Length: 191
Image 1: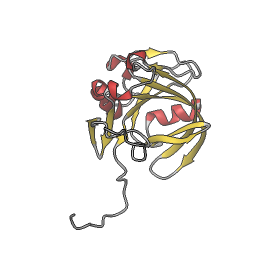
Image 2: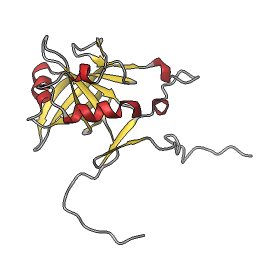
Image 3: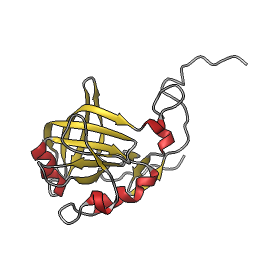
Image 4: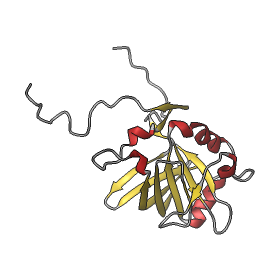
């Protein structure tokens, strides 16, 4: 084992999901922002968060509308995911430029991205100013999942969609499965 080095305080909690968050204000064109600061906050009620810099175009849209959709990404969506993170919706129509398909959501007025394997419809419960980013704490109202990724037991197999992850400025595919929750304490089958 190597010698440990001390660094200044920073975010080293990687990898993270790289997601495309769709948003829309009123009857304006929908927009997409790429976010890596996202995650689960609570399971009952189902709650998530995204953190967005206040100067980003999508920030005011989400703050005013109080809604957004987290669209999980895949390796095949890597270019669109990156592009939607470096271009501003003030200047371009991200859905059109990236050939992404907006589809109506069931519980929010914001469209989901059809090419995404999972779409998580969210309603903002609280905006928490944190510093460089504000956190949008949101309740999950509904989830859609692409039936192409259902396994033979009727369970969603996210790994089959080749999810995209983000780690310290780079995008990666998912590695191999090591085990499932609780595998370390399960009784082993005798051979």
